[in-house]
Image (cartoon, rainbow, N blue to C red; front, side, top):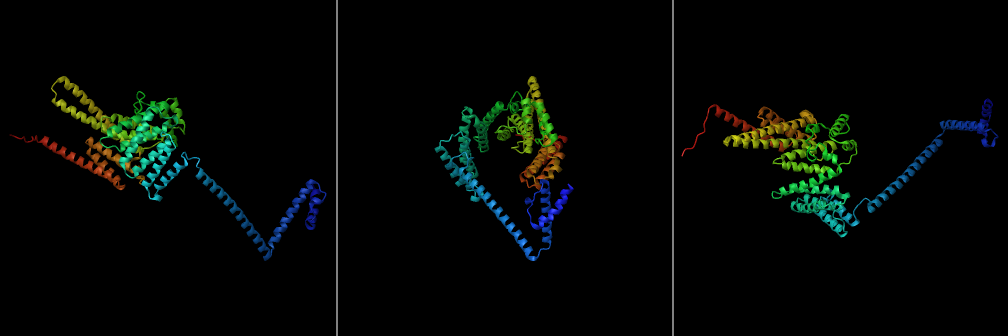
Length: 518
């Protein structure tokens, strides 16, 4: 080894000085590698030394070389960029012209694109022009003999109705929806829809009939309401067939629309978020308690496929419940709103603001209490007139039952409003989120509703406190409609207090109203 190093030390300078190629010397492979390394090391050290003592011409030459290399590098990068850009642009143009994702023909697509462009802000939202293009697209679809049950076809019809809505042409909009509703519902009822389109068309049928009820006039509102109920029933039958565990979850006699087997407060305690471990575990315990094995597997799946029409079904149920809660259908309204909350909490779909959905349920219970109060009042009048002892006993039994149901509904309404206030984080918790106007409106309406309940209980001190808080929140967020509601209810409360004071004074003084003599 030492001999090799010695030989390398002797040969290295000779090779470097005389420029003799190493490959011309008869060296062993190991000595050849060592000699090569030594030569490179010496040349590098000489280069560094020579660079250190370069004159100005040499430095300029080196600088020129460096600038030239940078220029060549930029030129090469620019060529690569142009080629990539040209390739992407060409691919994009081909895809725009070819449009393999577009389900429509070229002629139909052209009119649809023109319609979309016309209704955009760049074209000044020219809805009339957009309507003409959509009608042309529909005519072309008819010429091509497109199946009228195809979701592509019904999608164009819905765009036409949307343009009438944008132009506030309610009569024409209603006519389009009515014809589409009759066509779709008839085909769905008769089983003439292909399986692959069924869920989509059930959803469209729901959307159309929901909109018809929103547009309903006095003479059509009852018919439109029960037509929507028919569409909801079709969706619920579909759920029973494909997702039976959703239909049976805590339901009474397997009837969708009732969660008689579970406490609604358990549902309200749930948090639909899956990203918090406590919320996830509580949700899992709830599912295991009320679901069969199939349901547990479904809810454990993070990508569980819910019914396509679920969100629009929740909206339709909410609208129907709002229509029913003031009349004899208040019990059905309550069950629909309960099951809506159940599905919203478990699915994490909130087509309705969750706070609004809870408020609606509290209002439905309050309406129910008023209905029982009215019946109790009517029975009380009959009791005063009835002389037959057996009939009096029967009336008294019904009267006590109505009073009991009234108090139960009133208590439930208050509990739901209180639970909502807790879920929002209380008054101070909500005020911290000043930019969330929806949350602020929900808080204001909750406080207003609690105030109305306290008026009903004749707890006027508490009701006045709730009204003042509701008005403060509403005024801070410029919610003028809520301010007006609070003012009107405050006036009613003051009038009620004044009347009670007068009645008390009259009863204390044994005052007898004057009678009219002939």
